[in-house]
Image 1 (cartoon, rainbow, N blue to C red):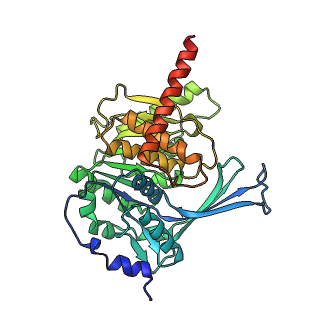
Image 2 (tube, rainbow, N blue to C red):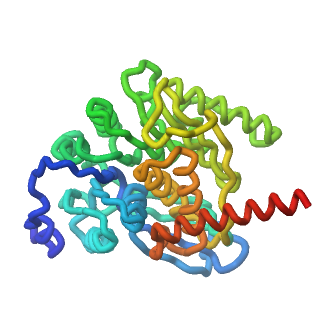
Image 3 (cartoon, one colour):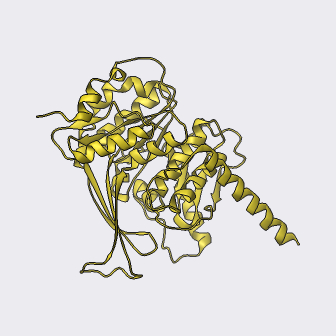
Length: 369
């Protein structure tokens, strides 16, 4: 097989040396793929026919998006993932590398094509349905990850999505526990969240420092429903709090539940431990409203939220402040048509938090008058 230019550059890179020096950054393990997003021009998405509209093509993948956002926020980050030996793979390596992500340790497969994620959005930018072909991620095996163990051991925090095989998830959690490196897991989807059930079986064998499920993914991990959406908001809130506490009882230290338009619920310091970045949090859990912003396209908002959260943890902030960085990153991302906002920077993130704080203070003064 003929080597591509990118493959030749990667294989000859001096950065591939098996250095055992302290990395001190963030290792992200998970999906990297091409995103295809279609959005109708009209207000109604007509089924069983062709809809005029716009189609956006770009680099994506949960792990890749998180890594890209972190690099833009000036966090040293290495991505462990897999792309095909094809044009799509070259595009991902080039775009991700230019953003500042270290991609030299990624798999370039001659067996599988680069993963593709196809999403159909409604007129508001919300996902209607999606199909993904991520067979290539089966190549992120325990053997591959074992060869990168020195990076994991030397990182300040590991971020992993559940696109990778179940055995690989278990290996990474086990390794992080043994070397006491904090790990954050993004469940990705209802179906893929089920891969965490064995890890979080309540036996106490493994712990996860941070988990960021949606409400549906939280149900999937626990294998139980939390009640009907038609219930009163108070009942729904109690269900979420109860489910988060149940997950903490199974070995999760911090649960961050994403609730879409309602924002997030953050439950701190479970499993009898205080986690890195969790010092100074005054209460065990808190609902936090989303930051205001024009919704252009919600694609990538969850990945941006995770990246903002990890940024805060990496910088040593409390969980509540780290969560605010996540909310700010998500709000900035949904106001663009891109899955990763190209001009995202530390200053922009901090400015967005200050704006939200000032607006909240003005609103409070208005209520008192």
